[in-house]
Image (cartoon, rainbow, N blue to C red; front, side, top):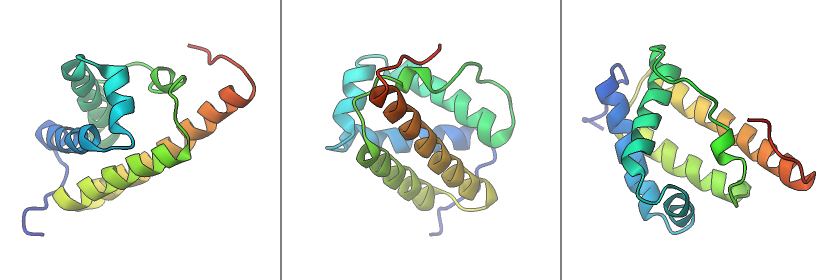
Length: 131
């Protein structure tokens, strides 16, 4: 596409995050899960996601914390992560190109795999994650 660009700045990260979560919020499968969890705190969630992806993709350390604990008790299975990845990758492909765009998709895939594994582990073992 002609309007694809590389991910090089915080403005690009904001475009990535904002357009992705617009898709998430409209999605019939995962949208309700996000709405239930986030409710009226979308501005704070988006700000946190800007900082997370800025840290991960641009190596500008603005995110501090552990990304897994807020997800540990979500009522999700691999199908939800597959949909999340489908939306994320489609959004990247629609808006961006280049090495960092490909890295974003790779990292999202690894994160989905890890989060799914950990959620299932805690659920199957009736365990609580360490915060």
